[in-house]
Length: 279
Image 1 (cartoon, rainbow, N blue to C red):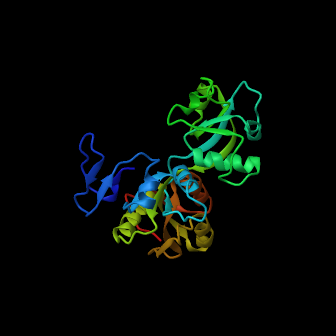
Image 2 (cartoon, rainbow, N blue to C red):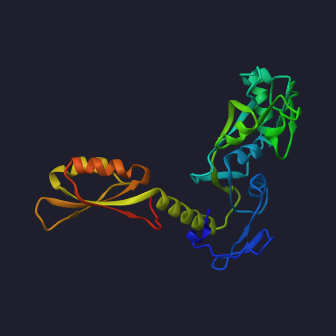
Image 3 (cartoon, rainbow, N blue to C red):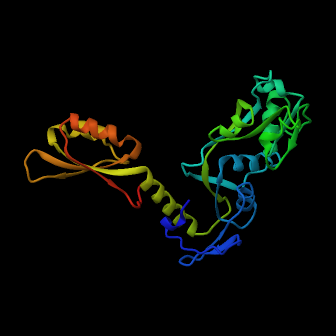
């Protein structure tokens, strides 16, 4: 994520994992994604960006009855992937329950243990017949190298999985990049930064659609472009006509324009949004 768009100005020196922000009294710390939930939930870090899978893994490690110190506050809309159970493509295993009692390698041991606890019908924390082994990297090579009968690993495009001769047979967690905060934070800047991030994400997701429409067709046009809350409508000097301005999702804008033409809209313009603050 480009923090410059959020007016968070900093300079990160080579090989340093911390940077002081020039225009706000905060520091940025660059950590591995897997460590961020720990520092946010248990340390003095107020905000963090990581994967939902990493938060789930952190929470799965908590003792029974312990409340997570990490709170998800926003889906950032990128980094989509799945934590999946994978086995050799040419093997006989087609269901995750067939791995019970076998060797499974992963870097998400807590989530994997919880998943196989459900399959085996035992309480989380009790001894499993399935052997869960931790590997920090190159998990997808574990089956080919004879360490595992199956793995639990992240899948994005699936190209690495296929190249390793693996296939997915079940999904443990669906993930995306998320903004998280500490449940104990009282830093007023958390709301400010969250608002800025939400504003930029909204601006990237939407465009501003402006058009003229006969007032008699306004109700139909408003259904096509309802906006985030409601369209902005302005009377024109030409009697019987109004101008409409509305936010529309980028991925839908071509279809929306076609529908507007059909109901009599004219002078349709689409403008990019640089930044926003919306409800």
